[in-house]
Image 1 (cartoon, rainbow, N blue to C red):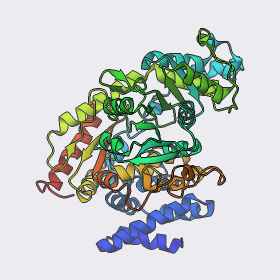
Image 2 (cartoon, rainbow, N blue to C red; image 1 turned 180 degrees about the vertical axis):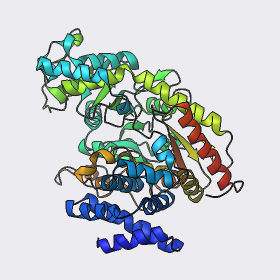
Image 3 (cartoon, one colour; image 1 turned 45 degrees about the vertical axis):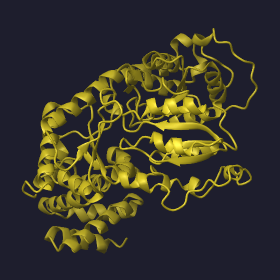
Image 4 (cartoon, rainbow, N blue to C red; image 1 turned 90 degrees about the vertical axis):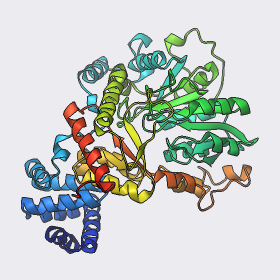
Length: 532
């Protein structure tokens, strides 16, 4: 981008032009910010453009951004402004813009925010022991082994095996359940692209089912899609709340197919008295940085099946089984293996996080309940209760609006009050990670891109591309295609949903500020309050 455009954008924002000019200015500013991230020279030009501005001019930029831009874009631009003018001026300008809540109300990730003394102590113990690979240490001292044992106890399952990522665990689960060429696996229209990619990597074909108001699989639509080729259904529990596992378990049993739980975002969550992960034939979890058990990367597989557990161990790590499984009747199986097991450093952090998991979930639930108790009844939206409101995490509460315009208007009204904790679902999927982690990565010139969290953007699936052109999964499953509009029902629903997000740092005064913004935005959108 020509940085003269940036300067004109800043001028247009500072002088308060027409609505069309302001919209163009914000768009130009976002484009310039993204260009600045991708190159040192551009970043320096962007920085200089702000250094020359006074606090009032910077505040006006911030005010327009909060009203107009998506949260990820706001996060990126604010981070660049902080880089340019320093933390004190950045915070002062936010307060001057009427966005003090950006400074005063914590907006953070989940488990990673609680990293502390236990993680440090465990990691140092690994380093001082100079044994970083789990199978080089006695079972009693292995942090990975202790983490697995902790999760077995917490989930109420027979086996847990830790992997390098949730995606690796998912691929192991699919392969271990016999998913392969000629098979179909039913996947929700709203989920991470890795769910469909894992199916394709097994040589099978993803079949897309619509979602319900919780953004979990619609049991009725899954029923419609089951065929003689269906090997499994993938039940994804998004945002710390279970999908309809009762209905999906009954459906899978009725049709004789496997139920795989993808609980990447739901560790510790319950479904009618049972922890998620204990209901399906196999379940996977992630320990990535934004999850409830946040170890940077990593994941694990949970199952009650001896055969599947053995497959996962062999597939991800070779022939060595943990000592605690010595009573397991191990089959002499010959198969190729990968190195996708979890290491001791990751296991040390994961164990510390797992030991405080219920405390984390308790904090999130308390914050959620207080926010909505203080907000009171709403006129412009309906809270989606979920399939087990008492068992969910309290991390993300869906709000359902009559249409997309009402959803976007409400989210903007909340953000003008300096509260970032309400995000439309499309914005959240597209840039939630940027919102959380961009400030820490800004010096790396990270270039934000739209996430692939809904089926029309699963590129390999749409293009019928497998890992090897000589082995086309779709050639074995004729008639499975993804025509225009195939996920429209889910996309229309997605556009009507916003989320209220909590985090473990929220204190009662923070919850009160969020509740006040929700109530004021609701009144404004209902036509019963002043517009900001």
